[in-house]
Image 1: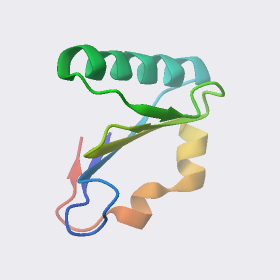
Image 2 (image 1 turned 120 degrees about the vertical axis):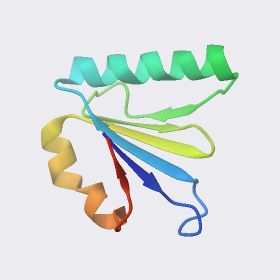
Image 3 (image 1 turned 90 degrees about the horizontal axis):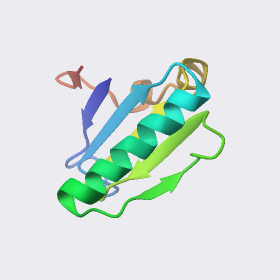
Image 4 (image 1 turned 135 degrees about the horizontal axis):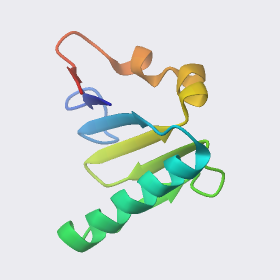
Amino acid sequence: MVVIDLRGRSELADHMVIASGRSSRQVAALAENLTDRLKHELGLGCKVEGKDQGDWVLIDAGDAIVHIFRPEVRDFYQLEKMWVTPGTQNR
């Protein structure tokens, strides 16, 4: 998982999280679990794209954007290369 600080670099959000699931089913399950927790624990209603296909899911949680990919799709888009700079937090 990679957490990218976007403050001062983008008006989209303050942080971007990029994570992977091993299969389409796992990607969809991770997205479902995360959106449920954000709703119940923080009262956030998130916008979600791509969950039905399960290759990638984008979760817009306001100040944070979360991308969850299958490994092959993550390799194809390479979002880390677009946004990562020295000092980026990797997890």
